[in-house]
Amino acid sequence: MYRNIKFITLFAALFLASCSTQNNSKPSKSDIDAPYSDTNDNFKYNSMYNKLVVELLLHKNQYDEAIETFSTNIQYFRDEDDFLKMINKARDLRRFEDITRISKRWLNINPTNVSAHKISFSNYVELADFSSADYHLKYLFEKYNEKNNKSYIDVEEILSRNIIINHIVKYFEQNLKNYDNKDLLISYVNVLQKNNLDHVALPYLQEMDFLNNRILVRKYSDSLARLNQVDEAIITLENYIKNLSITDRESSYELLALYLESKDDNKASLLIDNLISIDPSDDDFMFRVALLCFDKDYYDLSEKYFNILLSKSYAPDNINFFLGQIDYHRKQYNEALLHYERIQQGTFVNTKLLNVAKALQKKYDITRAYSYLDEEVKIKTDGDALNLLTLKLSLHQDPYDVDKILEISSKILESFPENQRALYSRALAYEKKGDLKQMSIDFEKMINFDPYNSIALNAYGYSLSLHEKQLAYAEKLIRKAIDIDPGNPAILDSLAWVLYLDGSYEDAYEYASLAYIKDQDPEIVSHYYKILLKNGFKQKAKKILEQSLMNNPENDELLQLLDENGDEAAQL
Image (cartoon, rainbow, N blue to C red):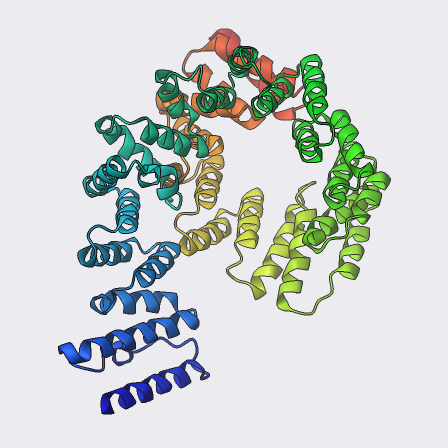
């Protein structure tokens, strides 16, 4: 009884300490020591004590200290919920070694726990410890065979929180051959497609009997389309659909997207009519069609179906937003403003504010846009002030005003020094100014805050390459970004460009080709064109430039490229 009273007194002291003005102070070593020697009688009290300490640290948002306390005193924990909670916190903080310690302890006390094996597999893949990862996947695979439960090898779900995607690819490219299983293969293909790695997924799909499989034929067509093989994707879906005895509306919807992508207006219009006629009262499906047309820049078709939906009072806030966007695109700013002003729901507040301000800026000037925002955003908290500044920052992206972006982002950072949006915006503005020192300071802050920020890593490396400075460091940054997001065409293009500047033309060609297949953005085309010329592919360079100019006839960069490199292309 005495020990129970002593424990309760100790807990009360801890609770009072947690509520004191020292909320952000770190616990000392004595704070986390177990209060009793570990006899059998005392063990449960030490367990209760450590659990309470961890809960208090979590309550005070001292996550690093909570994980450290948990890991150091892990022998006192046995509850699965405790392990899951701390592993999730460790994942958030990228503390992969702590995840290893926690999951090892978990498996030590419960060696057959499937969740622990899944987490261990995921963590070892993240750490590129592939032999340890394989041990856990083999266990999960055995359990899958015993119980016929696909969730045991659903690597799309198991690896959904992994950051370094290249480690996933490397692991499976080395080990997938050891698992002759269609469920595992399809799950891996899902991971690849989710991460824009269709060039890796496509050969696996081709090896499977996909033609008569609804799921696989759609996956195959999708990967073809995303690799710029739209015509072949269309043929694949058309052949599948024509052999069906009943209408497959989802497959037909995907075919519609391909018709719109290939600018086949007649086939697109006929298919839309057929699909909507199946059930004219299905407003949800009509909205999807209208949204698809909007995404593919078919504004007339999109407007037609959005207006039908608006007449039925279907999701009026959504509809008014998209109708406003269509009018904005057409430079009909009065009409756009009327649609934006009809948006009423709170979830659309910032969307409404920003788009009204943009329309006012186009119709009048930036002063009018500022006045509107100043009147609408009521400053009651620091969050409101940040929101107002962020909205104003967005106004200066198009047209790009480097001085105003520097001014506003710096003002944000005075009060919110770790604001990632402001750091990123200011870093790019410094690059435009040619101030690489200040640019580097902001990018380094972003990377220190999150070493796995692939956007910051790529932008930093590419910005250095634009000025042909620190090319070795630029390549290192971009390669780290590629490890995290290997399917991103912008990052592939960055690596191609820095390799080109460094004289590695063959390697540059490999990455530039892949970037171009995925995305024909004029900047990617520009880099690819120059790299093709350096590798002696004159005809191919000419063809891709001509094609891009057909799609972007007024692009200054491409027109200038044609003028500047015409002689060089002719000589080659």
